[in-house]
Image (cartoon, rainbow, N blue to C red):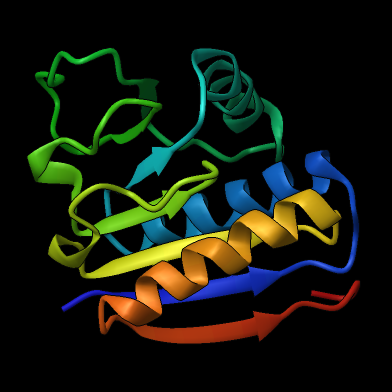
Length: 146
């Protein structure tokens, strides 16, 4: 059964939310997890794809946007707004406004919320959905020094 980790950021900045996501993606990759980053749109996926190339000097994370075609190279981070492909269901970083479909198939789902009221309200809705599904939830409040 999945475990969901909510990371609550102190800032209302969407850019800081993306930066934090990049750090978690890098940590997952370095730990051997090839996650799927779920977004709401192609534009959001492309923005994150671009940011992963530049967020930290010296960092290299093999990644690509997912358009429905499974890549030949399996050890890659996929970023997309489509349903999570089968081989990438173990770890999902959810930057979308919805719960991933078949969330219970994942081992870990990461939710990153900034302090924007709309983002928090959508996050509360997902929290309730996970809770109603019986999925274990952990919440981490991040301060500016993290």
